[in-house]
Amino acid sequence: VAAGDSSPADVPLTDLTAAAFFDVDNTMMVGASIFHFARGLAARKFFTTADLAGFAWQQLKFRIGGRETAYSTTTGRDTALSFVAGRPVAEITALGEEIYDELMADRIWAGTRALAQMHLDAGQRVWLVTATPVELALIIARRLGLTGALGTVAESVDGHYTGRLVGEILHGPAKAHAVRALAVTEGLDLRRCSAYSDSVNDVPMLSSVGTAVAVNPDSELRDVAKERGWQIRDFRTGRKAARIGVPSVLGAGALAGAVAAGLAYRKR
Image (cartoon, rainbow, N blue to C red; front, side, top):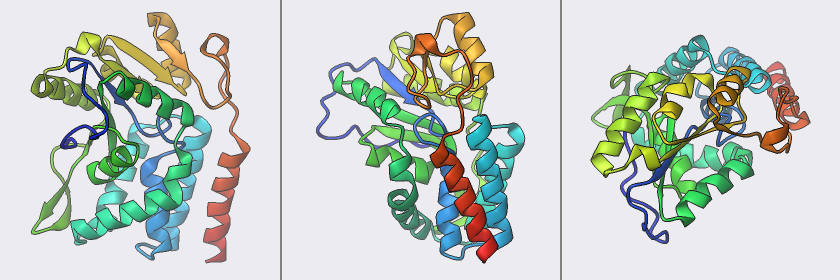
């Protein structure tokens, strides 16, 4: 994993032992960041139309179900590694900046962004914690004015990706380990920290801090949150936490995006 160098210059750090940790996919951003990134690379002819069809299908399932699985995470990882293998790190990072502006900036949940800003305004540091490649995670964090990011690290040699990982994908219990390690190096009191996620896979991370918040939760995380008395915020329907009781309906915009991706594939 890797973290940003420092907090945004215009945000004074006045609460040095508290921080907040945010998952990215379906928590900070609508859908999966790696699939938005893949769409951008597809437009730049990085891979085949068959690959694009697979990305569109995975994204549609994720947008409807709102839940990542071990299979989808592993598939996304392997595909991502295959299409960056041999490419310069600087090139992929530059493309990430472009693709963020094109496909991701408008997909940030305003409600979750406001929660992150609340912590920044309180003088706390805010990190993204995600299975997304750390270069992309750091771009998202920087654009949102956050402190930094913990993410999956792809191996590079002489400035080029090898197609292998450094360690394992940052997913599930690995996120909790990363948060604990960061807390040690940064002098954080995890009892005073907060964590936000949509997925039951992140229960280990949510359990490692004093304040856990389920954001746009999948059904299993919602059940865990209710059982443990965690806060629930759902920005998919605009409902207040107290009224959340049924899964959210797929928004028209989400469906339109998936259909558009499918049509683009068919035209090619």
